[in-house]
Image (cartoon, rainbow, N blue to C red; front, side, top):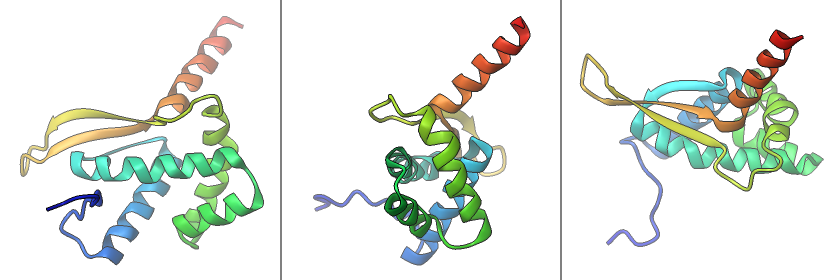
Length: 136
């Protein structure tokens, strides 16, 4: 039975899986969208959305919790700063669903299903800013 076991193991050990999710979350924060396999994108979404929920609080405690979840390297420090300054304020009025997963089809080499995971609000506001500068 698999009652209440929602962790997707991805055929990795726990430390490897945690490190992979941290790196993918940092890349998602830095690049605003990443291309990965569908299973990894589905595993990343709850982790990333919990980080945005922490970012909306914007207290010292939530910053320290986000850094502890992302890791203590330089990339994680930059990602935490970008999360609290750029991504979380854009999602302030949203109650959840901060990430979007778009299926891309199969990878050519091994036919693995690929997906694009991106922030919902980050790209919309960038498009609106680009339209405002075009009008001016």
